[in-house]
Length: 216
Image (tube, rainbow, N blue to C red; front, side):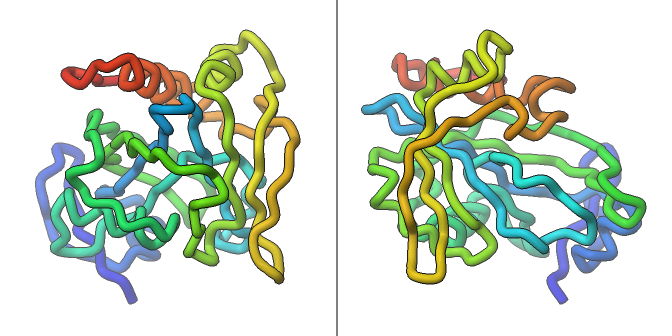
C-alpha cells in the first residue's frame, strides 16, 4: 500500500492516505507531470500507457511523457523519480524546467476521481527515440512528433500528423512510422483547458531560448 500526502482544496496538508482510497474518495493530492522536448530536433515525446492500469476502460491515448503520484513525504524535486522509473534515463531535477501548477478535478469513473495539484515541468531531452530505454512495464510505448506538428494538431489546424512510435513487444522495443490523430489525444487535455496546446507552446518558447516566466 503506497501512502500519498492529502491536502484540502487550498493546498494545505491534512494527512496521508493510500492512493486507491484517495481516488475512490476524491481526495486532493499532488502529482509530478512532465513533457519531454528535444531542443535540437524540436520534437516532443508522448507516452502510451499499458492496458489494465485503471479500474475502468481507458482508451489508448497518447498521454504526456511522464506522470505519477508523489509518495508521502516526498518533496517536489523528488518527483524526478518518475522520469527514472518510466523512461529509464538518469535525469537530475536540476535538468528540468518547472513551468507551473495545475489544479484539476475530474471524475473518470464512480470509483476514480482525480483531484490533483499537478506540478508541471519540461524535460529537455537531447536524445533519439531509440536511446530511451522505456524502463517501466506500465508504459507500452512512446510517440515522437515534430513540435510544430504537435501545435497544429492541438490547435485544430489539422487532425493528422506524421509520427514515430516505439512500441513494447515480447522481444523488446519496435520502432515504426505512422500517424497521430486528434482522436489519439485525451479529450479533456485537448479541449477543456487546452493543456496539450499550452504545453506545446511553452515547449516552443523554451526551444526559442526563453527561460523566465514560461507559465502556461
